Amino acid sequence: MFDLHAATVRLLLSLASAFALSAQAAPQSPPYSSTYVAPATGPVLLRNATILTGTGTRLDNADLLLVEGKVAALGQRLQAPPQATVIDATGRWITPGIIDPHSHLGGSASPHVSVTNNINELTMPSTPQVWVEHAVWPQDPAFMAARAGGVTSLLILPGSGNLIGGRGVLLKNVPATTYQEMKFPGAPQVLKMACGENPMRVYGSQRKSPATQMGNVAGYREAFQKAVNYREKFRNWERKKDSPLPDRDIGNDTLIDVMDGKILVEFHCYRADQMATALDLAREFNFKIAAFHHAVEAYKIAPLLKASGTCAAMWADWYGFKLESFDGIRENIAIVDAVGACATMHSDDETGIQHLNQEVAKAMAAGLRAGLQITPERAVTWMTANPARAVGVFDKVGSLEPGKQADVVVWNRYPFSTYAKADLVFIDGALRHDRNRPVQDSDFVIGTNQRQEQK
Image (cartoon, rainbow, N blue to C red; front, side, top):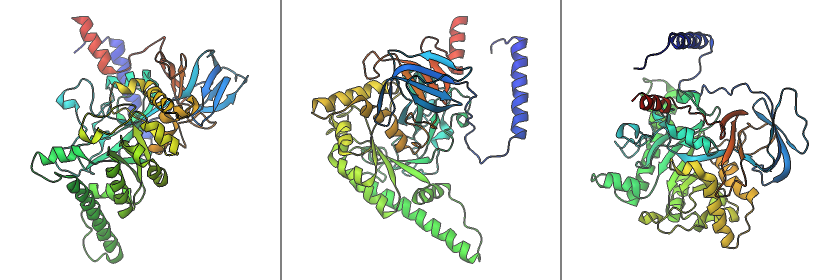
């Protein structure tokens, strides 16, 4: 324990008292709800930048005005409101905040030890009852590093060891003590599912099902059919009420919400044939797959993805590390985009999340070498607008349009340069990262540094 000064103790006690009073006064919300509140901010005017809006538009020598946490206006020679902070962004570029649609930060947290790896409930092949948010550790230093890379929102998912891994959660990438303080208000919940080798390896090695690809598909169908039967049991009870209320099953509750369109499905799949089978599964049980993740063979079925309205969350050049990833190509994202399907970049990695802009640059370069015409204003959508669509929040973030939340990155140069750095990162109009004034805001990091200094 560190010795705390009396003033610090008094401050902590006063904060605890204020928190208790506010908790008593606040109306009760459903359990596990978001408690995130955007901070009050003054107007901010960013002047003379090159702006990639995330809508396919590029504005040169343009201004961006942020007011009360929202995008207020874009254009040239905008008038600064009273008390506005005016920032000269000449020579710099502005994009919407980066959204990573596939991350495990906080759930598979740093430092990497067994007790911080909480993303795979490998006790049965189907675990729709678990919610990854209950495993998120907000003090994970990787959140801070991701924010320095321009990431303003990220979807935290369970791992891919199970056929149905559980619910994921979309977070605002802000410093917090509890995950509820990071939870993106109004974002739809998601369900993580996985096809292919991972569930087969985990359970096949235990001589359990699924041990094969056909066991995988049978496992999905069995889980959803049980949920259908469960729903019918409750409907019968509602009609007759001549017996005790059936026992609640929180896993089946999740699957029913999926079939009722209340929860989006994010599906880990590599191969084209597996994705096509998953789309058939969705048709059988009347649910929507929002995105396939990893999807290294998405280029083979890009027209099918477009027709089904399903996004593909992909890497720039990860492939070949296991058999189902063998047939990946660097042009994957560019081809999916060229066909008109929803192409997005993702990380699935605590290091890759720190430079998703450069991952987009690699994918764009591969497409250009293949003869596809890809502009920066198009490529930026792979890390902003399209991931927002994949996680169901494009009405709120993902582009710089009046009325949308002011999640904004100011880059020191062309954002797809090897040398690009995020100078300023705004989340809901509040400055959360300043490269010239870096702040360590993880209690874990601060405490670790203090211990090192005392040695």
